[in-house]
Length: 181
Ligand SMILES: Nc1ncnc2c1ncn2[C@@H]1O[C@H](COP(=O)(O)OP(=O)(O)OP(=O)(O)O)[C@@H](O)[C@H]1O
Ligand SMILES: [Mg+2]
Image 1 (cartoon, protein in one colour):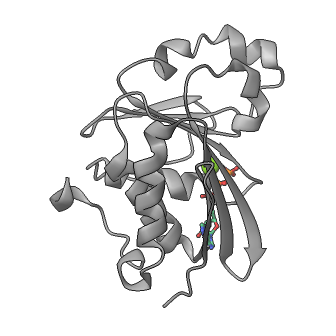
Image 2 (cartoon, rainbow, N blue to C red):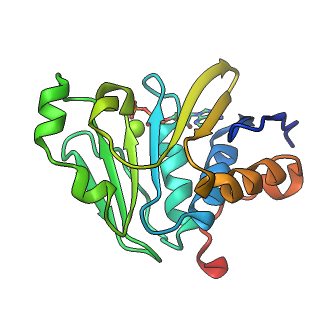
């Protein structure tokens, strides 16, 4: 059982703390459940912070039942669920020009859901409204997730996450959300 600490403010920013990968997946599942066409999640955090773990939960929240792997070697993985999930990883890209040349706008402005790992490498390449997620390893399988949205369109989603993580019992679920889709 975790002690979930939730902080929030009026500027669409919340902070949650997870204890173990299942809780980070649960946080992702809330994001996936509330995602809509064009939702974009820009993930930042060190190696092993939990970016793919969160993405896994997002996919389950979208109703997918696959296991999302880190797409480090293929740049983009597609998963078909309630909405198509485009899972991107910029780790191996070296320059902002390289990222801009990829022409990712079609994905960001499309009807799917985009999740970008190592998004801090390409921050100038992203257009449109998005949620920034910063994941920090705070030791002992604990992670601090700071989510900030630049648009009210994500208010309901962040509010739901806030509420879920105020309720430790519901936040402890992590199984695929197929039956909930
Ligand atoms: N609270 C937690 N949340 C997420 N992952 C956790 C947590 N505690 C421990 N872990 C472990 O940390 C690792 C996170 O791996 P993950 O692949 O998600 O990281 P990543 O940020 O995607 O790394 P990379 O930059 O290499 O792609 C997993 O081995 C997971 O089991
Ligand atoms: Mg990863």
